[in-house]
Image: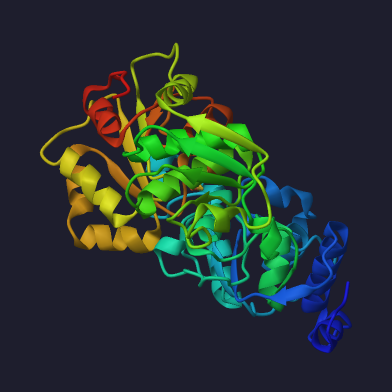
Length: 428
Ligand code: F3S
């Protein structure tokens, strides 16, 4: 790999041991992937993993409260404790282990609360923004077209690659942490223009309207194309951020898709030809009502109709989605046996409270939560057995991470189930 003088100097220790170590991690990572160079990045999203229960147990007991030691080992893979300097790249933190305002409702242990507080203080010290969300693009981290980024979180990476035209691979905790310290990332994968061209054509033969429709389409596309770059033709109208959040999260969950094009809609696909460039589609596949039904049935067969946990906000919800649910909940009460938790970035939770939405939720017996999510923070009401959600990604993970049977439906079906405690099946 070719390093410029500045990169070589950092590798040689001109800016201290932590940045030298971070640079060496990126160089090894880049060489393993065949990257010929590093590129500058000023947009990183990552995790500070020391707050996850049990993760610090790999450190000697006397180092578990030393955040430099925790970060050196868990985020930078170094047994040697380094003094971690401030980040160089603008860095946002992904979700945490709990919502600090609702840890009791979430049933989070006191020991985890302490770890989360340590994490927050450490992030403030090194300059990592604690927006604690899987949807940083909703709260100020919006890269520009063509910008090289180093983001973790598959639903966010597919969004910025495809909808914005920024450039990122799905990074891991180590590579994101290293990038934040030196402001570099290896030039490979979706940083390289040729790799962003489409190689599968998806003909969409039915109308795609609700967030659920977009999720079902995404989940099916991911199953079909795995880690390729699909180009979708036949979408009527212009989807919004919420639609594409659900589409991308689903495609990344079922198949590992990191980049797609909507012909005539997304920025690198002004035409079908532009989306494929020098490549030709290896396959053409059709998505119609039968495929939509098959994707829906995959999630919705043979489950208990008595639901006790409704999960909304995966990926984290926008204010518009909170407003929609507040309107459905206003003046109603949840079934006494059912909980409804809607997840959003902490910045939007603050606005939701100012706008009166939080009060509407709480009068109904529901919660707007932040900083966390059911499936990945592994939080659920005590004793919950059967969940319902409007998100294919959450439905994909809840059975595995929390052992919950999970129904999938529209936002309206989910809110109705929260009120009655019963799931009403049906795909319109
Ligand atoms: Fe976000 Fe959790 Fe879904 S991290 S994308 S709400 S699984």
